[in-house]
Image (cartoon, rainbow, N blue to C red; front, top):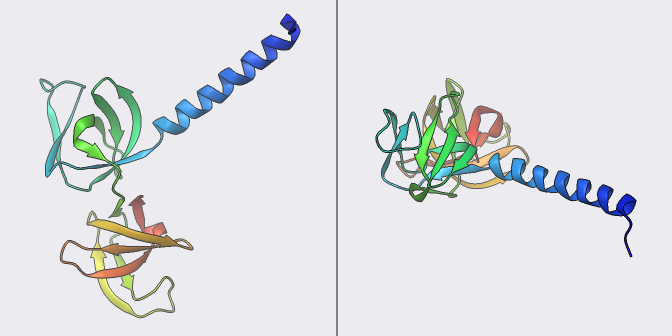
Length: 151
C-alpha cells in the first residue's frame, strides 16, 4: 500500500516530531519539593555538593539521566538533583536588585511591598506579563515577570 518514497518522508517527519517533543520536554521547569536538596556536580550522591536548594526553588531541566536531572538555575549555575526530590509547584526567584510588589497586575496599582534579588516566591497566578506571588511571610502581591525567573 505504501511505497518507500511515501514511507521515508513520513518516518523523517515522525522523527522530527519526536525530537521536537524530547527537546520541549527537556526544557521544562521543575521545583524542589524536599525541604533542602543538594545540587551536585554529577548524577550521583558521591559527587561534590555545589549548593543546597530550598523547597520551591525553580530550575530549568537540561537533561534527564535515570534518577537524576541536570538543571540550570536563574544565575546560570548547572548541576544535578535527584528526580525524586523535585516537583512542578510553580515558583519564581527575583532576578532584579529589587522588585515592587503591587496590589494588581500593572504599574497603575499601588505598591504593597518589595522583594529582593534571589528571594523565592510562590506563584499563585499569571496575567498579562505579571505574576501574583506570595512571599515566605505570607505577603501577596503582583510583580512584572520581566523581574522574575521561574514559572
